[in-house]
Amino acid sequence: MNRIGYYLLYVFLAIVALFQIFPIIWLFLFSLKDNREIFAGSPFALPTEFRWENYQKVWDGGIGVYFWNSVWITAVAIILTVVLASMATFAITRMQWKLSKLVLGLFMVGLMIPIHSAIIPLFSMFLKVNLIDSPWSIVITYTAYNLPITMMILLGFYYTLPREIEEAAIIDGCSVHRMFFRIILPMTGPVISTTVIINMIYNWNEFVFVNTFISSDKYKTLTVGIQNFIGQYMTDWGAIGATLIISVLPILLAFVFFSNKVVEGISSSAIKG
Image (cartoon, rainbow, N blue to C red; front, side, top):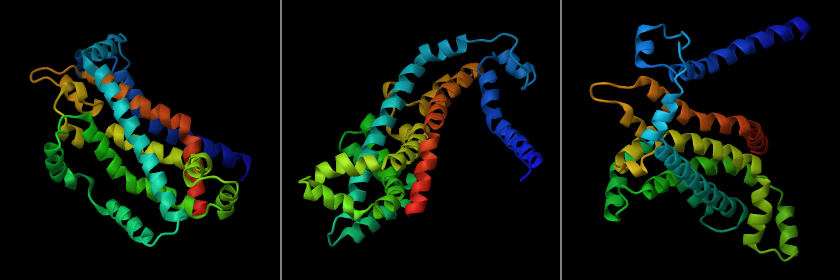
């Protein structure tokens, strides 16, 4: 490709990137307006006055609680999912036992179940064990439903890890548990980064389970808590825009910092799988 072709490619990619980031820029400007500017002015106009108090207003109005609920519920569910999926995948792909294929098939069946078709059975089960209106009902649900996709991503990498690594570790007197946590798990870092991002996007943005299982404001996450800023007679749309920016920012930052790892992990799984 000649130099003109490269320039045209860069121009095309710049235009595509602009279209991709424009909604975020528009939402940010939207969050700095009041209702009068939003409805009376042009939707693409800059704010006449940058109303940063919208962010302070929503944070003091309870978004801080919802934000930290989203953070810790998402983090705990991701840790449980990645650890359990890694251990299960290791046992299925690297250890010899009769029912390994059957167990793998049972996990993969979870990929074919519509995720929200189990709301009623889950609600009944959590009601019996007193987990309704508890954040742990959300953690358990997220972990269970993210296990199959996490295992599927890990499978291709685990299947092709060289057996010589495990044999050398066993010869050196390494136990199975120590070999997994000290040798195998660190080798899967790029693939685990991919699963972390996928799990984070789902857990952070999920709405239906939280709206169904949680009723107390002190346990609600951002996706559900934002409804509190929608009034019956009047809605502060600038405040809602600020809430949306706060909810989107962690996902954007996570992808910016881990995007290279995600690409590396997908490439590793594709090549090794």
